[in-house]
Image (cartoon, rainbow, N blue to C red; front, side):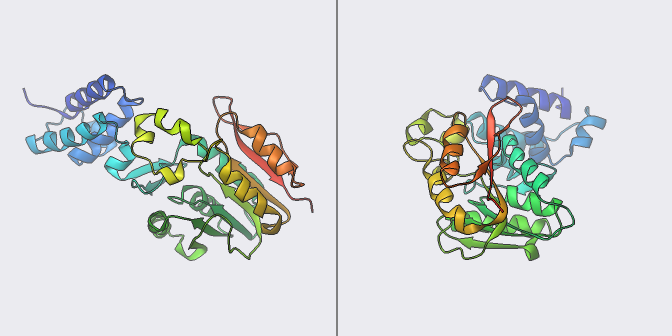
Length: 283
């Protein structure tokens, strides 16, 4: 009996479940689409379409990589974030759903009809800043990253999204050498304590760039560096919004409050975890 789209999807799902993958149904569909060269619509509207042996072999090769816990975003080279698709490689942190809460805060702060200058420290793939620029057509952005390879990915995503003319990318170590001031400063910096990284999910510990994960002994090194620079970077009444890890909202809030910033209650994610620390420079 020949394989069909639905039977192949089912087989891949079962293999991913056995491998301990968190989202086997979604990942199986993404691998089927990429390996067999079909769309989601094809799978839904024509599930019993026969697949060739070449398609089966291609899907099998991708599935083997996912069974080894390589992130699906690395395998297919893409990740959906907010309403956009971003090119992703092992050189950048894969954008995650909780990071969309940083975007939500940013959009609340930026009026659609006003020009605004936005800074993203540790831009990675560009997911945060490029999403904000896509939603706020009068905003302009600068993205900083220590990794030259990450900046290459961010530049590719900016070009693909038609935003290359509103973003400037610079290689740098957090805020060093930045002379401009900004209405809004965003960051999803590395916040995992160094000793905790080996215990993370294999997709993260084995495959994500350590530069984007390692926050030092207590996970707060990047926040200290960024917050030290905020007084000279934020315009009067300017706002910052930082993603934080579980249990970090309180110490990061305290670091910023000690610099004189007016702090909001942290914004919680769907699991109820305080996920985004938000503060404002007094006018």
